[in-house]
Length: 302
Image 1 (tube, helix red, strand yellow):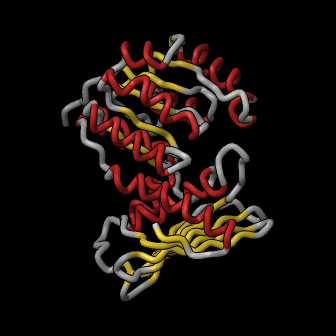
Image 2 (cartoon, helix red, strand yellow):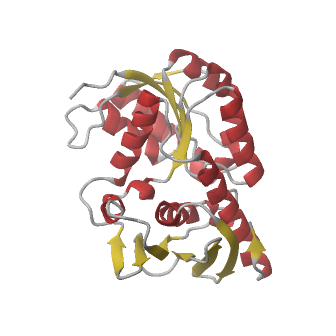
Image 3 (cartoon, one colour):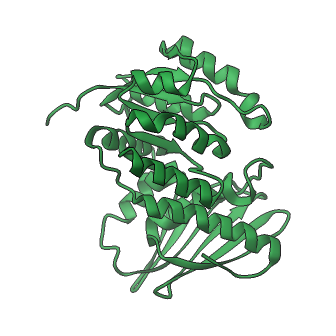
C-alpha cells in the first residue's frame, strides 16, 4: 500500500478541544489511531471575545498546540493558508467561519471546516459559493458522522432505510442559535443515515428536552432528540424495511475524531470531498428551520 504524501496542515482557531484532539492524531505517529498523511505545522489562534466557550479556553489550547506539539503560531489566517498545503478551520464559533474562509479561499488550499459549518443558511451558501469560485475542495462534518458503530451499521445496503431517530446532548449557547451548538451532532447522524431531501421540520422544546421531526420528500420521517437532563450519550435507531437496529454512539473503542480526521485527510490528499456540499447546506437549513419551529410552534418548510 502506498504511503500518502505528508502534507503541511495549517490550523485556524485554537479555542476548542478539537484542536488538540486532531493534532494528537495527526502528529503523534505512535498513537494507536494515528492518521498518516499530514502534520499540523502552522496555526492562527483566533478567538471570539463575546463567546465564553471561546475566550475562556483560547490560551490553554493555544499553549498546548505550541508547546506540546511544536506548532508555529502565525498572525493571520492568510499567513497560515500561504504556508500550508491544507487547512483545518477549527474555530469553535460558527459565526466566524464565513469571514475566515473568505480570507483563505483565494489561496485555493483544501479546507475542512469544523462543526457547526455555519449558523445561518445564508452564510453556508456563501461559503459554498466561494469554494466553487476559487475551486477549493471543502468539507464539514461532526465526528458523530464517523462514529464507528454508525459506519458499521451503514456498510450494508442502505436502500431499505425507511426512517431514523437520533439523539444526543442538547446544551445551548447564546451566540450559537438554538440547536446549532450541540444539535448539529444529532443532525449530522440523521443525514448520514437518511441523506438529503428533507422538505419540512416541526420542532418542540422544553426546559430539558428538544425534538425536531423532519419529513423527507419521499415520505420518510427522521427525528433528532436533544437532552439536557439525564444521560448525555449519543446514539441512533435506524428503521429498515425488515428490521430496526440500534447504534450506540459512545461504545466503540476507536475515537470518533479518528474517523473524522481520516476523512479530512483523504479529502486533502485526493482533492475530492466525501460529503456533498449541498447536503451540508441542507443540514444548516434543517437546524435553522427547527429553531424557527421551536420558537413559533409551527411547521417550517425547508
